[in-house]
Every structure is written in structure tokens, then in C-alpha cells.
Image 1: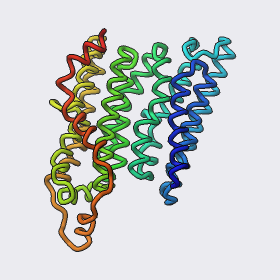
Image 2 (image 1 turned 45 degrees about the vertical axis):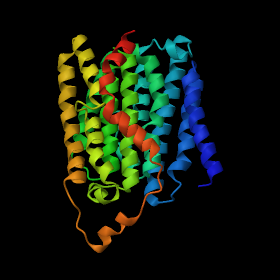
Image 3 (image 1 turned 90 degrees about the vertical axis):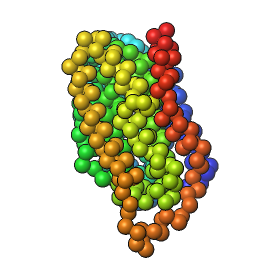
Length: 348
């Protein structure tokens, strides 16, 4: 793609998110979300592959549905209460409709079915943008809505953690596994949203760092399914040794960064008298942990058959920048000791 066009599209992506962040009026927020959707569509179809076109079509239809529902709900709210302000959603009907529309936008279960299919059709760079940046604008709106729909948020959160763990178990495609991982992490964020918005933001930030690290590893190895992971040891032995730590951090094992948000969320849920919910969420994390362990096993403890076709990609050096990967990997593995400082910041 022409670098000028890429720059315009990425600028539009940033602008759309910024408009949604800065808006207090529903129409402006809706406009920001639409800019976001329209800016990423050319990025998704840049390779002109039938799978990419199919994924883009699915993405466009789901996002258009969510945006139309959001607009309809905000008009309904203005009709019922005379208010266009985002903070002034008092009626339960538009509030529920907007929450569900935003859940569809970010891919929360049970409105998640589009996310694995769409991510599977994209290249890893666009997949990374879809899994991280595209979640920001809807999340900003959910954070502003949060006090109104406590039961709905807990149901969405629990369903997402369970389906995110369950759905990834039988997958062999890395992008689909990362999509289910995304659904599970979003579930954790939504669970604690109404009790501690700052903790939700912390979880979102750590999820971004860990996901960026994982996507960049797969991009460096040019891996799209589990079998190709077995060939990574000849390309980057040091990175192959570190990747299980990145994956286990995504799974939430101590003493890695990913343990911190899960630990704080379980603590907060227990404080709020939701011990059964916390128990279910913790058990669902075991499902996710299984497929991260499966990836770690495939990458570090198996060697692919060394035939002629298998050895070709080993000799192709990657041209990818390694600084972003080095930074995100270090943060994914090493940030747990900062938990007391972060907890102090969250409570202050």
C-alpha cells in the first residue's frame, strides 16, 4: 500500500478514537466510532485475498449493526428523556441497548462470533490493530455508562471469560486462538468495570502490552498455525525461549505481569461479595491456560520434520523491527514487582 494512503488511514484511525474520547454528545461519539470502522477497512483488504475480503465484509456488517443500534438507542434516549449527553443515560431501555451495541463492537460473548472469523482472515499487523486500538473507543463509552447495568455487565463478563477459554481449546490457527484470548480478557475487564474503573483500565493496558508482544513474535516467525511454531527455534532461539513466558503471562501465571490484573480483579470481586463469580472467572482462566501451554509446548518442546520444504523458511531472515518486540516482551514478563506501586496509584 502507498505510504501516504497508509498514513492517512492511520491518522483517521487515531482521529476517530480521539473524537470518541473527547465527546460528551452521543452523535459525536457515534461519528468517531464510524470513522474508526471506515479507516480500518482499507487496511484489512490491502492484500486482496478472498479471506481478507470476506473478513472485512463480516467486520463491516457487524460494526454497522452495532453503530446503527447505538444510534437508535441514543435517539430513543433523547426521545424518552430529552438528553443527548453520554452521562445522562437514565432510562433502562436505551442503556441496555447501548451496552449490548458496544459489546458487539468489541466482541464480548455472546456477541463474539464475528471476532475469530474476522481475525483469521487478516494479516498479523492489522490483526494487532483490531485486537488493541479498535477496543479503545467503545471501552471509553462503556466506562462512562458503567453504573446503570450491573447484572448485564456481570453476565457479559462471565460469559466472555468462559467462552473465551472454551472456544480456544480445539483451535490450531494462532489468530483464532488470539481472538478467543481477547474475548476472555475483555470478560475480565467487564466483570470489574462497575466496581473499579481504574482496575479495568490497568487490565486493558496490560492486555495491550501482552497481546502486542504475542502478535509481534508470531509476525517475526511468520507463524499462522501451531505447526509452524515448531520451526521458530532455528530462526530466533533466544526469542523461542522467551515466548513461553509471554504466553504464560497472557494466561495469568505468577510471577509474570499477566498475573497482576487477574489477582487484583479476584480480590476486588471478593471484596464486593461476589465470591462465586470470582471462582467461576478463576476456573475459566484454567481453560485459557491450557491452550497457552499447548502453544508453549509446540514452540519449545517439539521439532518439526527437517525435510526440504520444512527447511526453506528457516533461512529467510525477518526485516521486522525488533525494538517494539523487545520492549513489549520485557514489560510482559517483568512488571509484577510493581504491583504495590500500581495498587497505591489505583486507590489514591
